[in-house]
Amino acid sequence: MDEKQPDIKVHSTAIISDGAKIGKGTIIWAYVQVMDGAEIGENCMLGNGVFIDRGVRIGNNVKIHNKSSIYNGTIIEDNVFIGPHTCFINDKYPRHDTTRDLQGIFWRVGKDSSIGANVTVLSDVNVGSNVTIGAGSVVTKNVPNNSICYGNPAVARESGR
Image 1 (spheres, rainbow, N blue to C red):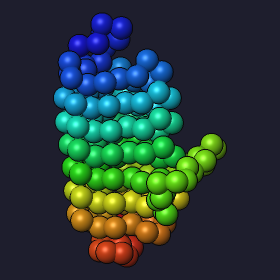
Image 2: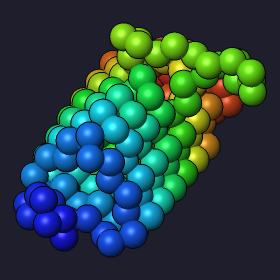
Image 3: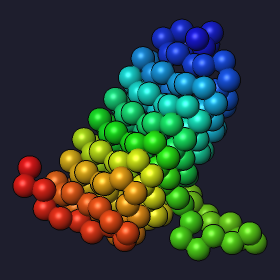
Image 4: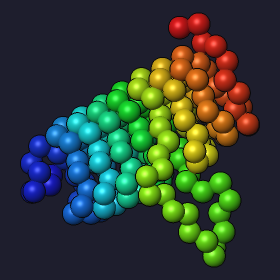
C-alpha cells in the first residue's frame, strides 16, 4: 500500500516516480514501473512487470496485463483491456543515434476497446472506440471504431456490433 496515497494499492517492488499521477482504486502489481509525467486513472489494474513511460495518459477502468509496455505518446481512454505482452511503441524507425521528439504528439486507443495478448501497435496509429484486436497482431494503420482487427499486418473488419 502506498503511504502517500492510501486509496491505491502498490506492490513493494513497483517503482512509481514522484511525478506520476495515480487515480484512486488503482492496483499496481509487482515489478511495475511508472515514469514521471504518466497519468493513470481510477480503478485501473497494472499487472506484473508493466512499463508505463513518461507522458502516457491512461483513463479509468483500464486493465493492462503482465509485461506490457506503453511508451510515450500513447493515450488510452476509459474501459480498455490490454492483454499480456502487448507493446505500444513510439518510434517507427528506431536507431541508436537518434531521439524522436514527442512533445505534443499523441495517438490513442478509444474507449471500450480490447487488445489481445502479444499485440504490437506501431507509433502514430490510432485505435478507435469499441475495437477488438486479435492476439499476436501487428497494428500498422489506424483502426476504425466498431471493428475487429487481426493479423500481421493487422486488417480491420466490420464487427457488426
